[in-house]
Amino acid sequence: MALSLDTMVGARSLRGQRLPPALSTARLQRLGRSSHLKLGAPRVRRPIACANAGVDALVSPPTPTVEIPAEQLHMNTFSNYLVLKPEETTNEELFRLLRDGDIGHIDSIGCPDGTVVEDDKRRMLIFISIVLQKIILSVAQPGTSSMMVLMNLLAENDLPKIIWDYFTGQLKMPDPNSMDIKSPFAFIDTRVKLEQNIKPGDSAYYPHLSIMAAKLSYENEARIRSIVRGYWDMEFLGFFNCWEDFQDSFCTQAFMMSDKPVESGEAELVVVAFRGTDDAYDACTDIDFSWYEIPGVGKVHGGFMKALGLQKEGLPEEIVQDPQTPFAYYMIRERLRMILKKNPNAKLVVTGHSLGGALSALFPIVLKLHGEDWIIERIQGVYTFGQPRVGDRQLGEFAENILDSPKRRYFRFVYSNDLVPRVPFDDNTWLFKHFGKCLYYDSMYRGQEVHEEPNQNYFGVEYYIPKHLDAMWELTRSFVIGPVRGPEFDESPMMRMMRMMGLMIPGLPCHSPQDYNNVTRLGTLMNASDN
Image 1 (tube, rainbow, N blue to C red):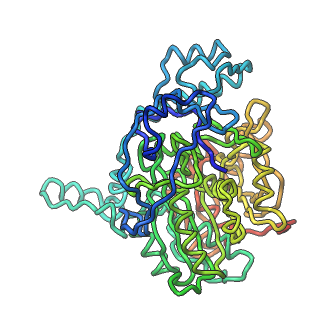
Image 2: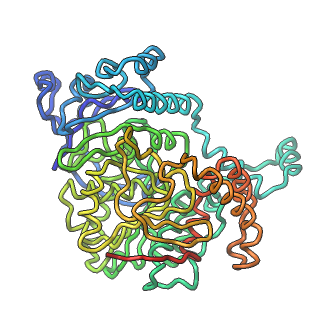
Image 3: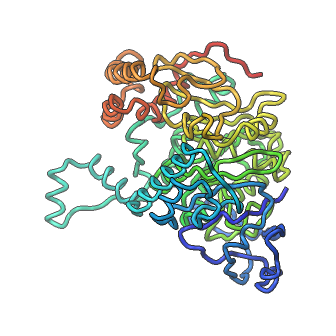
């Protein structure tokens, strides 16, 4: 099932699209608005060492670059869509959005002609989403690595020495690509070793391995490789630094590992871990409430689909991959095709935290759309931690038929008052719904299987006091859990700082991988079922 995109697109700049030679400019001009333009060509494979990829990539021969008029990008098989383009939205359009439900005439909102949003609350939420994205984009700087280097510098040296070395010209800045460089999440949860008491075959093994892989995905390639090989005694199969066509930047990262060398054909487990929210552009993805409706499937969150591999020309089954700007879905799928065919006994685990959890949930859905049933059959489980909602109820039913029938293979973990699984909001204004069962754990790490986490929209008045009491308990617990449970549970100074911030925003520290890691090590589950 090939999907080509409706206009929806306006990235920061409408850069030239990569088209097969057969689609000439003249032919594009002849295509009417009602046509179904399916872009993409058969893939061409050549071995190439992609930067930061560590795997063979798909390479295309040079093809002409054609600038596609925005109106011609409306040609697709999506039955409906709403695409927010904050970088193009003017203040006049913002205020027009508030007073006028006829959003079909607002140029910076992609939607079918004649679209009307009469609900004032829904228009206000669209307004807030656009404004927040505009604010984030206005202050976003490509300085995430610089901040990370500074954190590592302060961790290894005291401040007086840094100042002295700076003025004497002896200050040596850490290499951001070094295996010794840590992400902020590594300072929050310092554990790198797998729990020794959890072995393959244990019920906690896959969840524990998954959260550790999801946490590790925030690190750079060198550090991931070092920990996978040195601490976990597993095979590092590649790091994927992938292009987001609407942000015009590398916004999606993931890595892959296996329990045994895949070249031998004896691997029994392959793990794909998607990185979660890591910088300002990822934050825009989280709060981008655009959506696309796929006929017979449902409505899907636009920001997450873009991060996974949706391009301006759509989501065709096959593309000619540009090695300089690879798309996550296609790159990972091609690698899995090769590995799983060569390792017939290998099972697949897909995992991620936060945004990474959303991408993990959507990955098998797109595989199904493209007829990759044989890969889906090899999935042992999809494990997500602190995952936001990714689509509507119809999409959820479609996903459940893929992953939870006949056997349950989708496991969505939610810890306590974590804010992120409770957005986008689930009410009459929004269309977003979770699917499958939820494995919910309270602040005592007691778990239960529920259809939806308590306080599903976070701002319930009746939960205001309990949330703050939980935050007080979690701060207290951070000082005693190490002495009681063992040194591996000692919390870092940065984690305790987050706990203190949680006194004001209770859902903030709950989203950290720290507690999800503890859940897989200490959690008890009541009423659990794999069916």
